[in-house]
Length: 335
Image: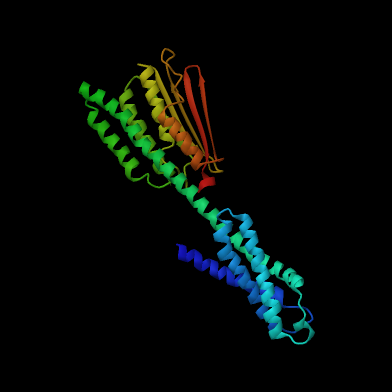
């Protein structure tokens, strides 16, 4: 990786030096490039290289700005001395070779060296920003994996409690519940490793989860599940909507022994916006203050913020013993 970056920098610097040399050497009234300009530019390039690859890492990056500026001035002065006392003697004769113009040589060197050195600053800034972006992406991915890993034990804990009660009663539905639960866990463990999964497959698992919990409700209430506008091309972050459905069943069954009402609807508009609504009834005699709280819901809120920043809207409403979750996700924003 480091060799690849070094190779790119070398190629970039060579091309950039050639471009700067063309602007430096060519003049309108001249048919070609005079030989002394090659030597002069090499002198400037060496000066810039010393500043970029010696002074910059040794002093500037170690927060020694004053020492860095001092060494830069020394390097430019040294370049001016080479120009006046060596290159001038080689390429010129007569008065120009004998006269010493240190001040003007110093002034002539500064623009070229500043351009060549400034580009190095810019290159390093871009590379550093790339490293920061990759680090932020790694942190985000790590946090997403951690949040996703919390879903499985949270989901398993809630459903094993229900399964335990059915096993104690010796219910004939216990094998069927185990089968539905194993299918859901298989999906969570093996098919949810990607950041996005096909929306149709995610909805199938929500349907399986609804069927699993409908077995437990039996004749104590009514469950509706509707889907519309789903296309095979759409993808969605896994295990987002199922958390809300799980909480709807959990709170309804824990607070009501009858007249349970749970409704889940999922539709996708022509503009690619997914509309998810989950509504459940509850009894006032239970403590409903934490309906919008808990590990699962806090988890899914964080995941939505990380995966769909500025591309989702999550709202809750609580009226007439009905609790409703509305989630809108712009699927096209993250495809």
